[in-house]
Length: 405
Image (cartoon, rainbow, N blue to C red):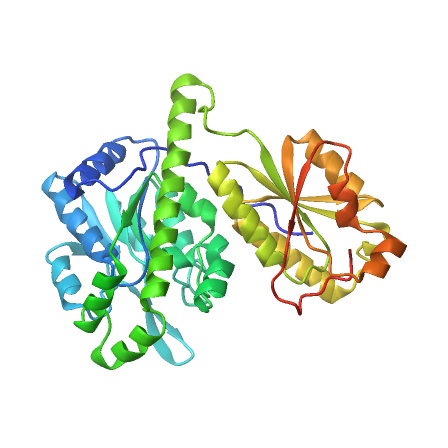
């Protein structure tokens, strides 16, 4: 059985479009003064070098001028002189030094930040993977602990690190991003601010040596930092912030009136997951993106048939199934395991009982003759009698085969 679901926390207050920095800081300060819990402000950008860390440090100085107790939990200037200089006289919490495989590495000292108990902590690079012996595996988990301790956090992330966009970035940019942040972590941010910079200006910064060392510039310009790639990432970042605005607008309306905003749908989404699907990640990320745009809850449902009981299913398949369920949890889905001999009927009945109106299922890769002879779960879902809409997700990779459905 998989671990208990990681329940996604709902978005809370005051995210919005880009405003003057002083206005943004004043808005965050109003959140800081509310004592019920720590708050999260997140700067999101299209790529390295747009100025997220620089803006975080600017805001830290602005908050301190307003008598807010601010510390640097972790800032990585990446050798950029302007960024390093902007740290100035801000209090910096010493980092932990961890020896790993003969190398001493530095990580944020979460316990030291909590012991210091500042009002606001700056924590850069939300998607960072900590050294294996660290308290938490990922930095976003460090941030959640700080928030739980009542400390407000200002952090930053590039849009390509969002878990649900992983396959989009791979397909459109040809880049595999290995460090990701679950979308529900971003969704719970109290403010999401887009640091927007045109592809032309970002490439100019790169050429001036303001992002990477000179020897890395030619390769970066020819590969990741192409105008096409940067334009695509910029559009994704703008879309993510727009989704954040919609989420918060809905929460404000719900809080003030006790009802959903007119634009919001109460419909829920469900992913029907086979035991050994070859492209589960594609299916889950698509569902996560749709749910985010609709500001909707979503389920990942697996139906265990009698042939797939624990004593019958292959151990490799069982391990893959658990990994896929955990991936769904990280993306914010409520993972549900059901039992039944008729997969389509079991899924559709659950969908009906839980207010689901859209079911996502992966395209069957079975030969047509097998589908005629044995039937197809996908076909039975499409022709369901419950009034459910079914979206069949096509897998571009012709090598993806799914002989279980």
